Image (cartoon, rainbow, N blue to C red; front, top):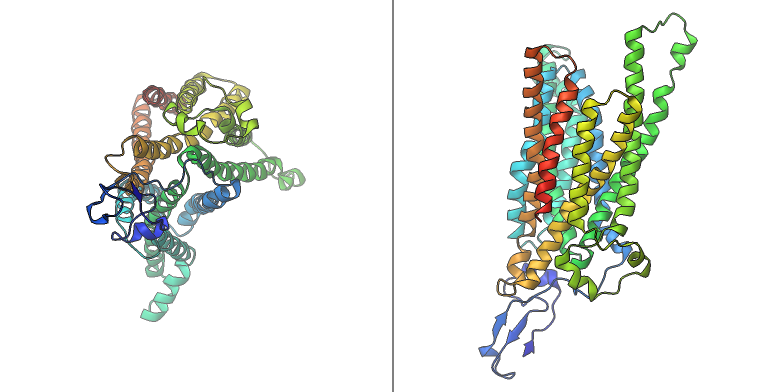
Amino acid sequence: MRIAKDLPYSTAFENEQLIPENLYYDSASDTDSSRSVPVLTMQIQNDDESISTGRLVVLTIWAIGLQTIWSVVMSHGTPYFTHIGISPAGISLIWMASPITSALFQPYIGAVSDGSRHPWGRRKFYIVIGTASTILSILILRQSIIIAVWLAHVFGAEPQGEVVRTTTQVIAIVGMILFSFATCPLQASLRAFTVEHCPRHQQGEATAWVCRPIAVFVFVITADIHPQIYSIPILSLNQRYTVTERDAIIDQGTQVGSLAMFTFAVVGLIGNILLPFFVCAPSKILAAQESTRLRTITKLFKLPCLTLTHAWMLSLLLLGTCMLAMAVTTHSCVGIMLGGLMGVSWAMTQWAPLSIISTDLFTREVKDPELGQWTREEETGTVMGIYNTAIAAPQVLAALGSAIIFGILNVIGITDQMRWVLGTAGLPAFVAAWLASKL
């Protein structure tokens, strides 16, 4: 048995003619290399070697950047589109661009990056392209009015006329569509990059670190907004502003909804931080974990009966139950509690699916050496793209389903329509729990 000369994995992967790291040769003679036949049992990361927490943070810190960008666009997008004169129906169609492009474009980007032989690596080139395109799209969105006025000046049109207004709308729509496309290679490549640079026994921990910055971000912005809901000094100082009963009810509903969101964010943050310490790895990778040196404090908190798939299934059952309870409850305090409990499911859903997928990629490589880890690893980008499709496609279906339910309830004459939508939304959660139990 002869071992090929070690080469950096990234170098070997970029050149098909080079021998990848840890690729073993089964030869009849140690001196006759011409008769050597490669056996593909390559491993990216030594299973006994764990990467440090600092490196995990560096590999996953991109999540808070993406979350910040999406939060800014989602929170300011609708007011901005309304300001430039786009109708509500048009705004709804604009927001449909993001899940549609994610569902269709990300798997393609993942497949293309899997076969890339760029000198920078399979992922880095698409990360740079996605980042530059995202920045460009945000600048186009931000400066759409200025660009329209400049174009009007160049072509001699009236700077305050209908032409400028229409041009502004077109530029903003183009910027939003470009933003939807730009985030696809960025998100797919970053996820694949994270998976490929972590050993399989740390895939769950890496996924947890992806979710923790998001949870912290949601908690911070929610904690900052919540107290402002109650401060209305203008109304308290100026007696000419009268509050009708309807306005008071709307204001109370806003306060309750804000408190529910704050509770949801707090529970989600706690869940993202603590749940990984209690949940055990899937049984298929326990053998890999036994060969590693686990932290003593982590062992103390692990619950042997609570595997990752079981915890995800239970969280989905909790989500479905809370959604059904939301449909029948009449007390705001109960609604706030139910909203907080949903944070547990949100934390698990942010973490569990990606962790299961990433660990399964590495587990299959070890268990089926005849296929070779080379082939399996080249599919990481495609798998991550399909994973994002599984996230984005249901958003389109949920929007269409909710619109159909609202339409039917309008025809029937039911005014309290949100109850029915929430109750109906709880049913897919039970189906998802059943599917999770089959993993």
